[in-house]
Amino acid sequence: MLHPSPTPTSFVVHELHAGGAFEPMSDQQLWDALTRTFQSPGYQPPMLPPVATELLQLSGRETVHYARLTALLEKDAVLARRVLELCRSPYYCADGPIRSLEAAVVRLSLPKLRDVVMEAALGACVFKTHGYSEAVDRVRVHATAVAHLARAITRFTSFEADSAFLCGLLHDVGLSAALVALGEVAQGERLRPVVDLWPALASLHETVGGSVATLWQLPAEVGMVVRLHHRLKVGEVVHPVAAIVTLAESIACEHGYGLVPPPLKVRGEQQPSLLFGPQRIDVPSFQQVLLARSALGFDAPRLEQVRAACREVVKML
Image 1 (cartoon, rainbow, N blue to C red):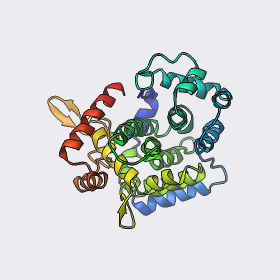
Image 2 (image 1 turned 90 degrees about the horizontal axis):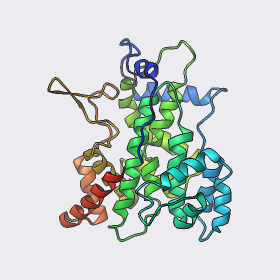
Image 3 (image 1 turned 45 degrees about the horizontal axis):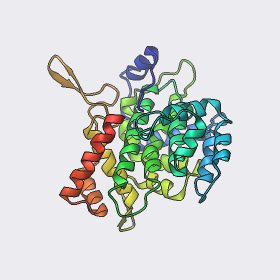
Image 4 (image 1 turned 135 degrees about the horizontal axis):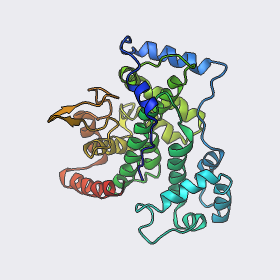
């Protein structure tokens, strides 16, 4: 289910070793750079495929005939092929193999079909960049893991959370959008090392993600969680889906699916990621996890049940 795309070595070297003359970007410097990019006449923001956009709109309805959904997906052959590949993964075909797109549409609920299409679109179509390709790919792997873990966690809550998967999948969409924008530089222009961007991106990616949510006309709840998935609260109240995403992100990090990859052992010593450096901008704090647990009503025995279910999900990623 999580298949990192191969990254050309020339881009990896370019990305990791762009030179040592730069200092880490401040929040204001990053915001100014993004603003210049977004306001440039030649800037084209990443957009969802029309099929994914239409399916998002249809998913708000009570019922949609499966023939209409099949016909919609068949409009985009590349996306349809990727959707079918995902539906054939162990996570979705527990009740038997799915042999056709029509069978996938019939088998899955409308919200789950929407989730598969969005996972396929973000993995294959939307965020493409040569400049920061490895970093964008790591964001995708992390977000996909968080999405599947978030869906597993909802089974232990007392409320409906149909948007949990989508919120998990898109919670760091601001990171991807910012990296794509900053990575599209003129030929010959030197890129700033991605490791220098992380501190400022950690501060601003919720805001950038909120802009993407508005641009894509995402459901209101998804946009809200994207904007506050680190803060968790709307006023004084913890948003339950934001709490689910926080807990899912914490568990993803424990299993090696954090935004920052696990450190490598070199000659017996652990070396931090060259791409991210020593910063762990992805790991929720102890206080955030405690707040999320309290909001979801998870005592110690319940949390262990959640963790056991998440371990089973991790095996299928």
